Image 1 (cartoon, rainbow, N blue to C red):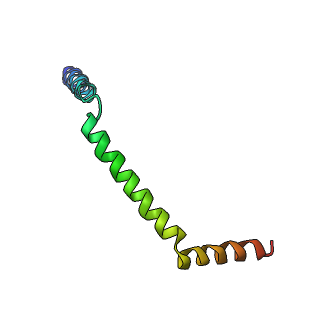
Image 2: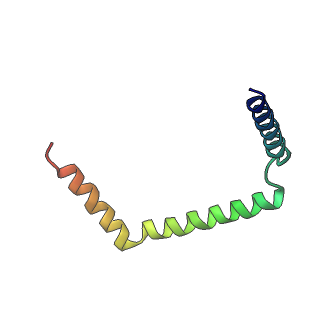
Amino acid sequence: MGRAVRVRARMRALVRRVRAAVRADGGMVTSEYAVGIIAAVAFAAVLYKVLTSGQVSAELQNIVKRALDARM
C-alpha cells in the first residue's frame, strides 16, 4: 500500500509541474501573431484565386448542378 501512495504522490507532483509549465506559456507574442496573420491572409488569397479561376469555377458549378438534379 505504501508504494501505491508514493506513485500517486509522484503523479500529482508531475501533474502540478505540467500545469505550471502550460500556464507559464501564456500565448504568442506580437511578432508571432503578425506572422500567423500574414500566413492566413496569403493562404486565403491563394484559395480565392484557385476557387475563382475559370476551370475550378466551372467544375464547382457542374458539381452543384449534378447535386441539384439528383433524384431522391
